[in-house]
Length: 364
Image (cartoon, rainbow, N blue to C red; front, side):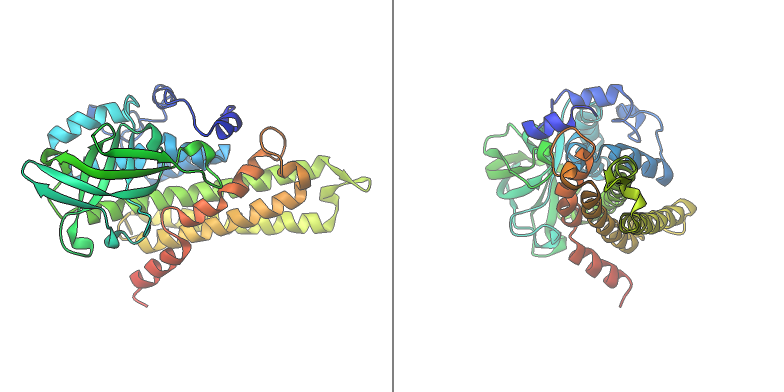
């Protein structure tokens, strides 16, 4: 992706990139062919691992989060939507003609989905939607939002999902300036008495919590794979630079302190890669699935983001000032990774929530 540095400075990328990615064969992978999905039509966990791994060689989680927003906003439509809803929304979203973002996170709570505050009150043939969603990837370019809102009592049993069009009266979007993911168009979405037709509700009323949580597991797997690959990219760039850059007359890699940094980075990357492969193998064999592996996936996400943080830091030390410069140069991927460490550790479920989820599933 040769334009990433430019898009990072611009704070976004051309919306036409969605359709270009579809034509290139990477945007429609895994979606039903009747709605425009492309081969492989039913990718197994290894296909998904390879796809996430290769896409993250660009070391730009921001562009991937906003370019592939349909990877987390479309599954609820296909999982619990009616045939009419699938036919209405899925083809254009899969082909990149329309953009759809998932709107779950709120200013007062991200990982605590059961504590959702946005409300949808039934009034005749519509629901009146009120609330604010925050940190929504790709929201500035979205045509639709897959929105979670409270339709019932407190807790996970009172949440429903809706398809909300961005041009509905009362929908307002504002771009958020973030530490990393500059080209992601991270967005705050406000809903002020937005009337959403009843036919836009996905599935039964108060049945939205489980699809949201199952969706998280797939997202966390992708983030774990991506973080591990980005850590490896930092290591690769550090090794490449250390071999050619000389310090006091010798290549940096000739200094023991640099070799030990590289070895420590490799130790963390390889152990994380092994953990991810072990989970993928269990899912592939049927020993686990995306639901039952929730605790392991939570741990994998934590495990993967720690090496990313370590490798971004240590690679920066190896390259020195070259890793502090934005844009082109031998340290551009490392500089970008350093800015993205925190969102990988927080987004999709913070480390603290992930560890708690894993301990609960283990019934500690």
